Amino acid sequence: MPDMERLSFEDAWRGYLKWAHRLPPAPPPVTPQRISGIAEVIGDFDVVILDNFGVLSLGPPVIPAGPPAYAVIRNAGTAIRVISNDGSKELSAMLESHRRRGYHFAADEIYAGLSLLEDAAREAVDGLWAAIGLDPLPVPSASFEARNWSRERFDLDMAVGLLLMDCGNFGREDFRPVLESFKRSPRPVIVCNPDLTAPYSDAMSLEPGYLAHWLADEAGIEPLFLGKPFPEVYRRALDDFPNVPPERVLCVGDTLHTDVLGGRHLGMKTLLVETGFTRGQDPLALADESGIWPDFIASSI
Ligand SMILES: [Mg+2]
Image (tube, rainbow, N blue to C red; front, side, top):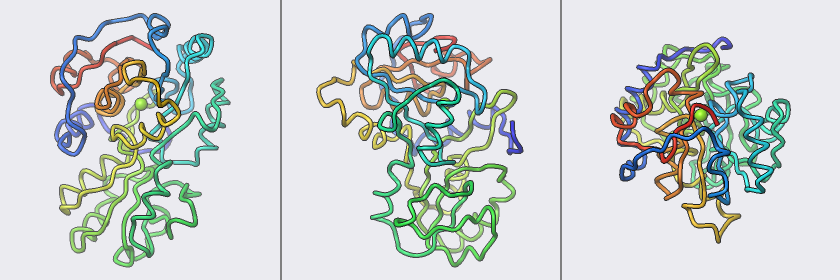
């Protein structure tokens, strides 16, 4: 894992349970069916919604089951949409990194919380926004006046709001001045990546959703979350399929509180894979504890 702050599975899991009240409500339980992979059920679906991190890749390295599964979906003629919570780079850069791993997605097949940022900007306060993210900040320049506070520590009290995009090597200690400033003077917070953590090959990282919930607790702010598990990004991706009923859409992901919760909340079917967040854990015990049950479980996609 690059030079990033690490989060233990326990820290992340306790966070997801503690902060579930800010997420969509858990759908009614189902009994998960264990399958060998997506090839076993692909004929039952018209659209597949793929998560990236933990399903297709672990940061840079490709997950070995990913490219053959990608070929299965393409060969079946099933439509694909990728919905990622990546807030680190423009969609065009995401496409390029997928291409390098052997996944050839078209520009109109990929969505992220960032896809909603321009609309969010229309409702947002004018003025300087402090961002936590990677340079170049993937912010549409016409929509936000944003400066990267994680790079240059300007006076936070000047900012009209906070954009949480990516943690990079920004950690919890670095965030304390933000907490203090926003406790003194609460302002709007927009979260492009609602994930608490991301699974790298050797460890798990701190992600913006963690900081957002922490700030919400401390400063009494209700952040605006863009991305999974919230419904808007799914609706955007599903607009192309007005005649496909939700039960003919399969959402594949590695995280109960993002991919499974978000998909089932809209009536879609879900496949939890064990190559990411839940690796080494008992998925049924996690489903029981969280009340979030996937329709299918597979060791990999
Ligand atoms: Mg994931």
